[in-house]
Length: 410
Image (cartoon, rainbow, N blue to C red):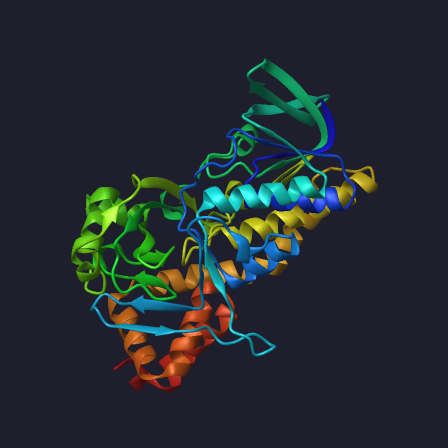
């Protein structure tokens, strides 16, 4: 087989790339080692900016089958047990900004189908084993499926194949070092008390900061529940993620009482979080990386769906420009990196700084206390967390108060 572009991986990044390419008239082949629907370890939260992008692809959130829930606000608790809840500031039209909690088995199947409707070809159950090179240039990928090993040629390859990307490894890139990777573990629970339309984030353990636990509702009494911790804090703690998840459910002040009658409905699944602070190269001759393969996970929250969609789309646009100009060198494809950095670079960079500030239990407790006292502070804090307002504003506000209003921190 041949194609203009091969997209490796059919999750949000790959499907966004394939959708944009097919819509622009490219012959695009999407390859995924699994068959849909397939589970994917994730908190399942889709923030407002990602909801908007998916709707542009024709993914309707109002008709999901199974457990899915619209949420509007967020709840954050600090290490001392205090908490606050709020909606983020409203959109330019005055409407409430909605997020969704949708299991990835359902979401990813919908997003992949959107790419297929646009004209992309999807081959499932195909394992990509490496890149093909001819005369020193990338010319496609080698694959294995039920029929054996074969080769598929293309002008451009987009690696959207996740944290353990085969494409990234084929390019000689190493996986992230300890400072730039986290690990998360999540399970689904039923029988959880007092769930609201909130995405709950609980910074419950000083030893693990900026790691946290979450409770994201998927139904009236069901939730996606998990913990995420940076590798350094996990190693220093000497604990296992499963033990940390159990401690979160059994002892976190804002959580434990609500889980007395809860029961797991799935086994807990873990996954790595390659965060953007690694600053991984994303453009090569004839090849680009997107999503987790490009190490574009938010350092503050561990969220990756929005950046996956953005980087998938920017890779597609760069690929189309290169094909039309008959130049798919790294220099010609550089628009991919320029576009995703322009769109989410500041968001990710500010997230890295805020993550470092969140290591301080004292500072975190101050922020939670002040947000609980002032609804405007609370609303903006939620907006900074989910990325609907500029995080750089938060950083400037912290520095301004350090110098001009130090009493704020007392």
